[in-house]
Image (cartoon, rainbow, N blue to C red):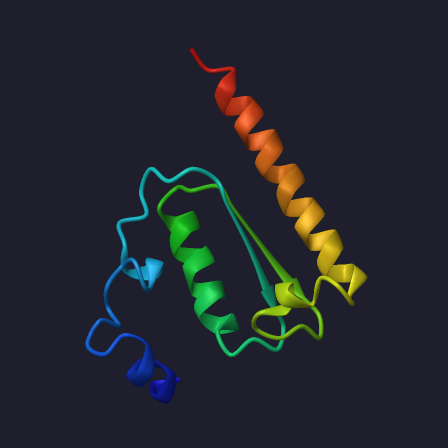
Length: 103
């Protein structure tokens, strides 16, 4: 990961916009995290989910078996990815409709 950071954002690794785990998480809307079981960032996603929950944010973490980082780009060939995209869209649609009902 050090090699990626060195080419991605030199000296900005702690910026909350790059690593949301460093942000003030209190007051965020519900969060759904979907990560591959083989993603090198799986542990960081688990830690983020824990921190979100500790901050009082409704959080769902879904770990997809045998999936790598960036699995979404395989939506043309992997039905499981299309299912994930559909589920995320459905959750977003539901969340937005609930928000729209508030005065």
